[in-house]
Amino acid sequence: MLAAGAALVAACAAQDLDPIVIKDFSSNGTISGGNSYTDPLADREKCARDIPLMAELQTNTIRVYAVDPAENHDECMQMLADAGIYVVADLGEPLTSINRDTPQWNQEVYSRYTAVVDTFSKYTNTLGFFAGNEVTNMRNNTQASAFVKAAVRDMKAYIAEQDYRPLGVGYATNDDDLRTDLADYFNCGNPENAIDFWGYNIYSWCGQSSYSRSHYEERTEEFSTYNVPVFFAEYGCNTEDTRPFTEVAALYGENMTEVWSGGIVYMYFQEANDYGLVSIGSNDEATRLPDFTSLSSQIARVNPTGVAMASYSPSNEPRDCPSQDANWAANTTLPPSPNNAICSCMVQSLNCTAQDDISEDDITTQFEYLCDPNNGDFCSGILANGSTGVYGAYSMCNAEERLAWAFNAFFMDQTRNNPENTDPCNFDGAARKQTPKSPGSCRSVVDQAGDSGTGAITSAPAPTSSGGGSGSDSDSDSGAGALVKPGFNLGTLPLATYVSVAALVGAGMVLL
View 1 (cartoon, rainbow, N blue to C red):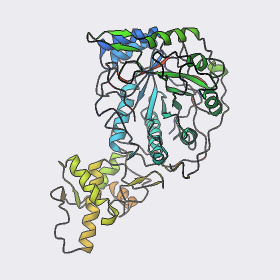
View 2: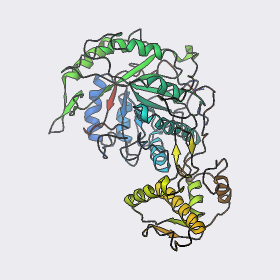
View 3: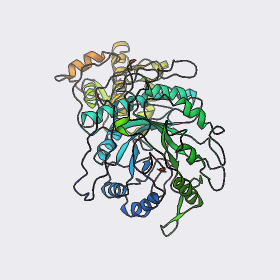
């Protein structure tokens, strides 16, 4: 019932920050803004500059939108721990995440996400992870949510499989007319697939608004029965030159603290969008902006109370899954878990495969031809449809592996039906022939998938490191697992001034 803390690396000499305790939680089981990013937690000098300013705002948690798992974060994470500050990290980055227009849950994205989990699980001030941010934002891309929920499922399973301390995996959503369906979808069904916390990006309180005019009252009522923690993953409307942050009193007042676990102020650095709390000058020094002073004043006035863990007894039930209709397309059957061992078996079994040095542009060109239904059925084993809930057995493989499958499907079709095509495994040099192999357990994998690649693989070899899992691919009507609600008990304030940090070196915010 209670999570044990993980030890910090030996280099961290200061006392560890107590890990977030999770109660009644079962752990069984398109990016905008360019393609580059700067890891905000990999620069000691900038962390040393900015963390004291965050502490001045009584910050106890920051959210970082993209981190580089290959970098060393020990010093910045320790400085944050020394200041009593926790971290929620988004798992994606500009080139590797779930794209709302062409969603995939595949080996590349899985490996990126697990690498972030591996890197940050060792820090006791890691609070959890976001598997997506505003991926579904319109009615024509709701099916993308099936892929994000699969990511939630597999990251929860991975954390358990690696024997890490329980760490929450959540989702951050935008504020629009899809809010109810989104909240229901990610909370419903099999608890192993459901979010552990819910982040809400909301900018409806502008200037001198009120609890009712801002629709905070409506939102609070809507989430009063939610059975996992909810908090504002972004807030801070900037329609005025200096944001008055009058919503802080409401957010940490008696009307909302029974439901909401605080909120994120967007954002720390001043940029073209004019949301910053500080600006960075040419001398690399940070200057407090009027918004900083305004927020500090409002935070100093609140004194929210939380719920003692010993007296907390959850009673809310998980939501029912939304019905599929004209407004909501995501199926409750989720994409399969990426498993590199399955994909390796598939590639070995082929007569025609992709060249090792094939370029990304060539992969795109070949897919455009092979996966055009007008040219034949060569991609059923690698396609994934979050609306119908139909996923090819190899839809979770990487792009080169999926293309190899399509090359082979074309090759086999032409060999059987078009003897005039004397070189069906060429594709202008992008493909090559090979001698197929199916060693050991690979034969079972190939047999389960079938010649079309559409069969369900229910028994497979274990993946290699960070190579995927074997999570359930569908939801049931059982309840979602719950973190403590209404609040993470973080000390100074329950998730108070959860300052949204896009990059501590001033890079633009990265959004899914």
